[in-house]
Image (cartoon, rainbow, N blue to C red; front, side, top):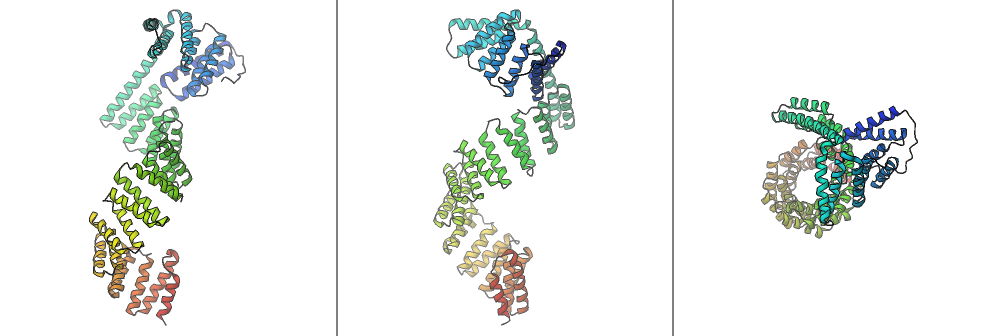
Length: 549
């Protein structure tokens, strides 16, 4: 407002008074109900009043206080507006009170003290408010140990006299009565609604809150309660709508935005954009920024927006670099973005922070997977997997990955031992038996391999890989194509697109001398392989040609 020039528009005095009355009413309503709409109305009316009657000092200092609340001017700007008001009406006690208040905010207590003294001298018997403000300034002086006995006596005098004279301060008493009446009305309807809630009479509770809203117009309070009630009744759509209305009434209520963000994120996972908007609005409050960026990172990952995900997690990590979960999530985002060196750096940092052995073991698993699958650094992968196993000996998944690593190096003895260790941890895990069976087969331990595959199938009959691999043992190990066919066909029943099982059926029929069926299944294999690309098409064609040589 300090740099804005308002052009006077001369209107009749009664109209000016009407605008000021509307401004005071909206201002008063805002002070009682703390709703954004009332604040906007009061600002609009005060601006109109200044345009209509530029010599109205009251409009300047009242507008300054509201614009300061709104964040549209600084304390210096507010003081400039008060200076204008005092130039128009030097003996206006309220202008001095507002100036003193802004001087307090500005940290100039000596100037504030002078302004409150001028307000007292110009107020007469209605000087209760400036006396109490002055006592507060003196009290802050006493607390800062920059006071004398005289200041203590002065503080007591103005505090006691201000407290006593409040009974003659009509504007203060009027506002106090309105605050009291409003608070009592809100309390009554809130208490009634909460009583019905405790009695599980939810429709009656909703009706009580609706009446409270109608009576008091405190949408920021009652819409919030109605949203909470709807959420308790699992009416998610209604809950979100009530919270939205509460947010519209008071956009500065951070708690409502948190409710909107968390409820939408939890119950409306498909509406990611709205949840992102709520969290971005929460950033404007400047509180818990690292937590908000962390949530935003996960939301961006759900949208497959890797760049924004990395950016959000990076901001969270920068605000709280010692948080292991932020480092881990940032590393995961880097993996998604295929920036593996960065991912390794932050996984290592998360592991060093080690907030919990079981959780850190999972991070070691992720780090080992990058070393094994991306970097092809088997030594680093083995070290990461072993570190994870030490942290959590019950982590079967990481034991299986270590076994797979040994298998890729053709170190079958270590692979078998590692898989067997996994079985001892979780004897009901079908996958451990299937992997053990494969390693035993590669080691030419046929009987042990069959036992292991049978155990895997017993635990999970729908695991097609174990069915297929058991068929391979019977076909290639024992030379029993007839028995192998049973398992290959079960694998296809489970997964009709299992290309390798069709290929093995063709091999079994070929071994049995049934060239026609073998050719049929080789052709089916070739057709499927065009989609799955599991096998060499050249190898399949050669097998078909050899059938009829």
